[in-house]
Length: 124
Image 1 (spheres, rainbow, N blue to C red):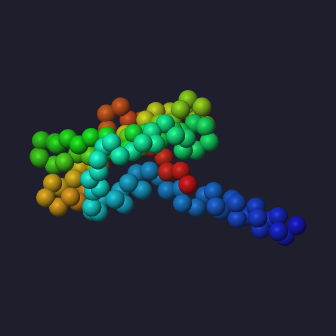
Image 2: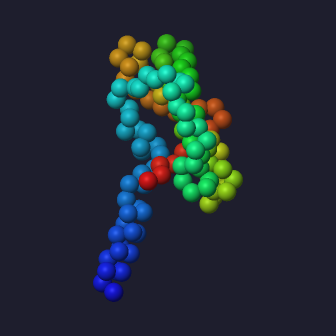
Image 3: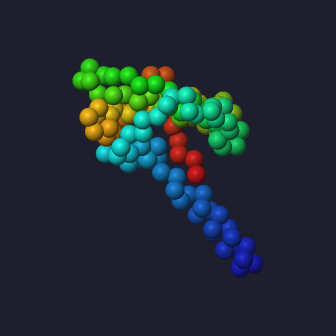
């Protein structure tokens, strides 16, 4: 009986530990070096991420520049399918990092066009 109670407590705490909101998770990247990658290096698009309602996106898709000459790294992280537990989650998680072109440091980030911010989730 004690083992079952201990096991239940560990499982419950394991499900809640580490599930930080997406924005908090992404804000931690500000001030760090931006990963300049080849947009074609990700070959896992379409794989399941969690259960049967989240598939991975294309990863790093392309680079552009804003009016101030800063680099914008565009990322497509995941897509939440219509079988998700909540309808508001359905959509694509697309963001871009604003990067200083001289230092390659991430200055800021924002949601990209066509993104549903509710679909951006941290799955542990």
